[in-house]
Image (cartoon, rainbow, N blue to C red; front, side, top):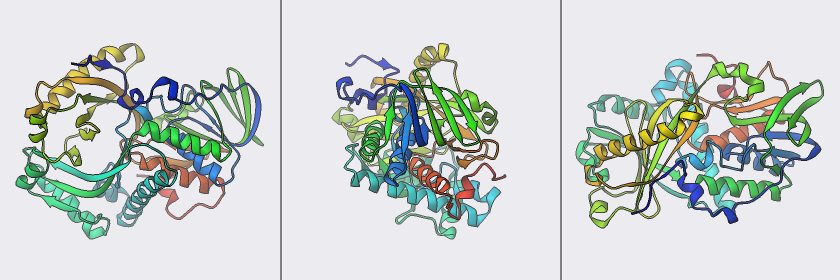
Length: 412
């Protein structure tokens, strides 16, 4: 039996330390058209997108690429819809805006998957179904959600309602029913991050690791960034750190910082595999906050849940032990047949949630020459590509109709 590793993300452990790219620290002074702060999946996607558009790009990461609290710690899902239900978005913003947001998220997810294939990024990318199910007698709400999507014309091909019997056949879960959609993609988010970083450098982007930005100063003719070993003067700076850094703390009122937790089991024995259904879909329950389940290669379960306000660094190890045990218990309530199987790793991840659940992409009137990609929440990796597109258009001063739906200027 493998020893349980606390704090070690599954995706990071799959890439030996000797095979992880090693980028230099920033030393001295650089001039750039655009500097990107944050080397997670979002930052690397933006770097590649800008570099492919012949923008002079420098990316700064405070730790190592993809090894912060995002990319290597996520589930690696490319979902084709926002995290919030269609009705939840339409209520404050109206049907037309909700439809546009839905279409933009879906298009970005599909195009992101296509880009990873085109770039030949080896990240175990594959498509599957997604099932949003209920075990608590909340079928009426999910049925209304499916009807609202159909009426608005935003359902994917093959979206359907699963009865309790069909849900059991599909997933081996005893529940009231579920909403099934097709086309969600799953991937190794850490390898995707490294692949996009490599594609960005091929296009001329410069990447510096272990170079945390300690100071951001906006000038009349650019932005000055300071690190421990050097400085950058850029025409424009993109903040892709997931949460506003210290120099921009006034923006934090827009966000709630949360921690979520993920466990991964060892390979299921044959008897357990037969008892857990087809293992062909990403599962999400209708609880709040939701629980997510996906299958990793080798018939291993990855289970994410337990969202809570961000935990202080000194308390994280203790909380992680407690949450790992809790998640394994909650997993056994979904699948009693797996009760007793051990977790081989458990880790936490951080994300920022906005008041309305939608991210903020674009400029802010109080911070000229800065562009932001913040508040991704639980939407999935497709928003990285959507952010890159919106920000490139903002940099080129050619915004698209609909970009304002992700701007700081939107109101609930």
